Length: 635
Image (cartoon, rainbow, N blue to C red; front, side, top):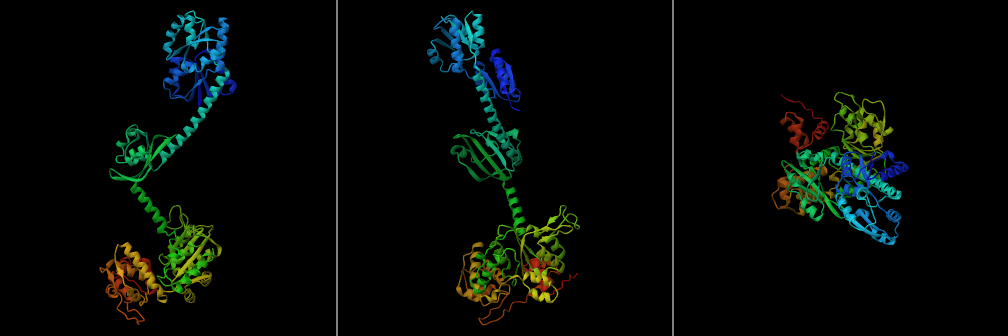
């Protein structure tokens, strides 16, 4: 507990102070000493090493402690007007004179407004001012040569006056003055406590911050150098505290910050082999500049964190990026699909089934429905049911507990349904889910709860399900490949997306949009004549919008012509022959033959085949299953 040290220069004040301390009930927090002048200085220096927050003393003793620059605040017991009036009254009484000659030997802090008071009380006063305690004998000698009737002052003054045979009287403090000093000391203790708490908070913040923190004074001397700064700059704090900041960080704009009191943010500097990003903020207290705080981080570390977050969030697709305004087209079919989808977005929990050929934008619509629903602030979790084996799909969707199977994570793992809580889960290629997975999904739809693999309890979830397929589920139900009860669960809200060949009016605006996008991306300056857009409308686009987008990207990248005409398009369109406006079908190389040829070339290696065909492994697996193509490695 914080303590007060009461240093009394004379026994009378010592006894008086002890009495008041007990009356105030603060004896457990006050230590009391009898000491004056030089001895009091030695005592105060010793108290600096103890749990003492404030010193109370009086007169010359208080003054010499303050001048000794002790690091503990000193509260002076004031010599009040009432105390001085009492002194002058006692002087008249002792001398038995109506207007005695009074010599006052005192430090400046004891004589405020004393002249006016002495005049009022009828005293002829002469003040003998003291600078240090060593001045007292000389001043007493001067008083002895004067016609003073009485000497008043502190304890050392009256003791020397007595030796000289001079009439004397000790200046005493009244109880009110002593109580006032204790009240002031309590205020200082409280203020220092608040200051100490703030300092400790700053220290904790600095010590545990992942950023390097350096504090400097106006002379650019380092005062704080936190552990993160030690790690980043490979310098220990004792080596640099008290030295100039230029010895640690060179090339930073400290002078500009201090001179203009200007905050500087987002700057970079190279320190050895690493690059740092730093901020500098001036510290201003009561309009006075008291220094600056420099914070900095390793740019490489920031980039790694950003990449990690991006991978965790975007790679798992927990964020929906697209809205209805991002879906390009003005055909009646597309407008009607967007209208229906917007109506579906207003319904919170009903399951949505989106049907459309590959490349028609099923996920764009799913994300748009999510972003226009009341769940837009929740997660959007997308999973491709065709891209994962049946056993892995189950653990991904529903999660598992520790020890559920060989290779399971130690602490288990939440499933995608749990991660989509209060949001939307998008199940793409729902037709590829096996029967067991379908039965578990049906239970989720019915009960709105999931059970992790290896667990025995259910976890309630609040999730909207949007499913998508490019196959007719009704036909799969007839073939026994899809559960009928699950099909009817999905059939509540259905959205059919027309293929691009049935909305050829959208081809031109889509093409113009992709051209603008890719010319900006690849910094190309090309002009496309209107006839090109009409020519593109003649093609069926079996790969739909995705095929159109990839073709235009390839065209923008590889063409050298400034103006793209129909002939230029024909030149670079190597997977179709020239067709007239009346042609009804494309003459592209059949996809099945292309896949089979690629498989033979790559010895049925799926990864190499997918790379050769320019598609994902999951897409290739889906096509192999769709076309009933068997893969056998040859040796």
